[in-house]
Image (cartoon, rainbow, N blue to C red; front, side):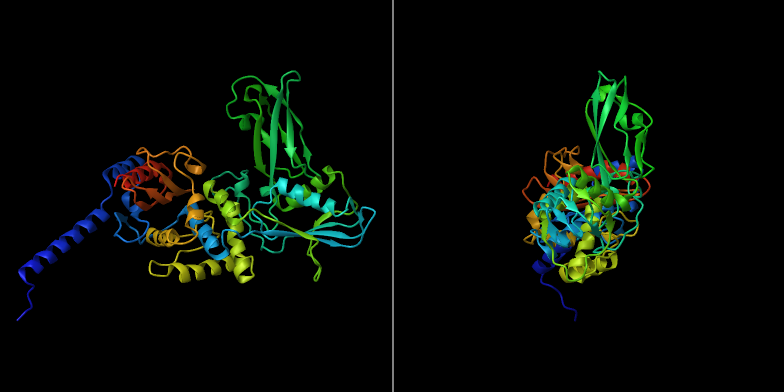
Length: 473
C-alpha cells in the first residue's frame, strides 16, 4: 500500500511546491522594464546574463537569468583580480622599488653605477619618481661617473595592442604592464593660451631625453570643441612630439595626457630627463640591465597601500594597473612575474577560497582587456558573497564606483534615488555592471548584468533598469 501524507501534511507539501514553482518562475522572468530596454537596444534575451541575489546568500535569488553561462565580462573581471589581491596580499600590502649604489661616493660623485629595480609598483607616477631621485641626491650624489641602470626583469614583457580595448591607443591606462611602470609611460601636456603672442605655450611633463617637443602652437578663433582634433598632433615618431594644427583660444588652459609612442624607451628617457632637470650630471647613460648579484639596496621607496591602489583600478577601470596587480600575484605567490604564474595563482586561490561548484572562470590578464576571459554570473555572485562575509569587504566595496557620485558611474545616478557600488565593463561586443546595490528594505543585493552582443553597449539602459528594479524590494 503506498504511503500517503496526512491531509494537513499534504496541504503543506502542495503549498511548499507551489511557492517553489512561483520562486522559480519569478527567478526566470526578466522585469518588464528590463525586457523593454533590451528590445529598444536590439539585444536579445539570450545574449545577456542577469542575477539579483542577497549579498549574504541566505535566500534564493530574486532573479536568475542564464546564470550558469560563461560570458566575457570585460572590465568586470577586475573585481576578481582586486578581491584576490586583497585576500592574498592584504589591504596594507605595498610595492617597493629598491635603489642600489655600486661604487664609492667621493666629493658628490658616484664612481660607479646606480641601479633602480622595478618590482611592479602600479603607481610610480612622476612625482614619486622625482622623490626617489631626490633621495639619491640626499645620499650625497650629484654626479654619476657610470650609468643609471634600470632593472625591469621582475615581470615578463607583455606585448599588447593598446587600442584593443576601446580604440584609444593614446590613453595612458591602455599601455602594457612593466616591472618599472613609470608614470603610465605617458606625457602630460598643458596648453596655456597667450593672446598677446597669439600662441599657446605647451608644457611637457616629463621632459624626455632625446625627444624634440614643440613648445608653442598658434592660437585660433572659434569654439573650443574638440581641441585635440584641432591640434592635429603627431605622436608617431618617438623622437618628436609636434602639432600641425592650432589651439582654440576659447579653450583656456587644458591638460592632455597621452601614451608615449615608444613605450619600451620611456623609462630610460624620462629618468634621464628628470635627473638632468634636477641639476645633476650623468657621465654615462641611462640603460637597461640587471642588478649585480649580492648587491644590497641603499634604500627602498614604497607605494601607496593596496587598498588605495585598487580604488584607482576599479573606480576608473585602469587596465594597466590591474595587469600590474595580476602579475604581482604571480610574483608574490609563485615567484614568477609572468602571466602563467599569475593565472596559476588566481586559479588556485579560486579553488581554495571560492570553490569549483559554479565552474572556474577563464583567466587571461586579470584586467578584462581580453577576448578570452570568461566567467558566469553564478560564479561571480558566489565570489561577491564570499567577499561580503570577508574582512576585506569594506575595502573592496569602497573601491567600486558609486552611482551618480564618482568613477565610471559618475553620470549614472539611479532613478530610484538608491545607492549602488558597481564595477562597469565595456569592450567591443561586451558590456555590463556587477557589484552591490542597497534595496529600499535595507537589504543589500548583489546585482550582475552582462551582455555579449554586437549591440552590447546599447544595453546600458537595461542594466540601469535592472539596478533600479533591485532597489525596489
